Image 1 (cartoon, rainbow, N blue to C red):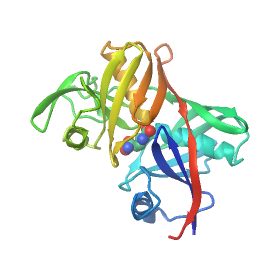
Image 2 (cartoon, rainbow, N blue to C red):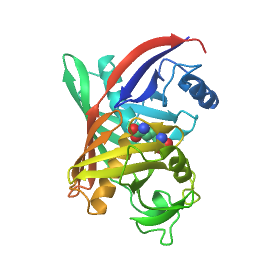
Image 3 (tube, rainbow, N blue to C red):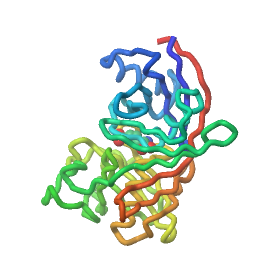
Image 4 (cartoon, protein in one colour):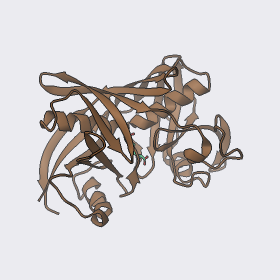
Length: 282
Ligand SMILES: N[C@@H](CCC[C@H](N)C(=O)O)C(=O)O
């Protein structure tokens, strides 16, 4: 029997597993993730996150998308990791560090009635160099800002940002009626992205507010994406469309994103919620 906790951040739901208690061989994880994430035959979720011990930070986050592929970073997931470790008494600290794919993030936990309600995460520097995102570009050391790209015969402009994981941000007039199911997979798997990409479709509401839908690499449309919201805020600022602090409205909730340009750090603040706990035979 495998113990798990189902949690979400703005409706981006993952299955959280204590990797110190549940020892699963690495080669079995992708298949297990696909089974557990299945919304009809499994627990159901956008993927699975293992919370492991670490010598470099307070905890390690090991993140898998629904299709069993690893991702370097997960913004909504890392807030839930903070809630998991605090609410379960694995730490009594309200400032913690979490490492994911070799990069350490620092988190401030906001506690109400003994439980974490919201978390502010220092998401680090946005990565803008094409070869580091990675996105194929004429100038591999340059930035990809408002560059033309064709998907399914239609022309769009994309701005590429990595928050540890790759994102392509496209500005659109209408988010709600945007044909995400057609355009999202085309952008995710476009040959310019050697590691595929997460695709954000963004409408500017005013200089401090944006609306966004996301097509996630390895999962498809989700109700929210934390790293995607950070990438969108950076892309808005780079294109001169908003201030450096924005409210991002997603299908499943709202995130506050600040790009502190003096420090060149992105800060994300948002909720973390536990849905239920259980055990499943594997
Ligand atoms: N939903 C996440 C991002 C999850 C990983 C992503 N699909 C990828 O493959 O990079 C978030 O909140 O950041």
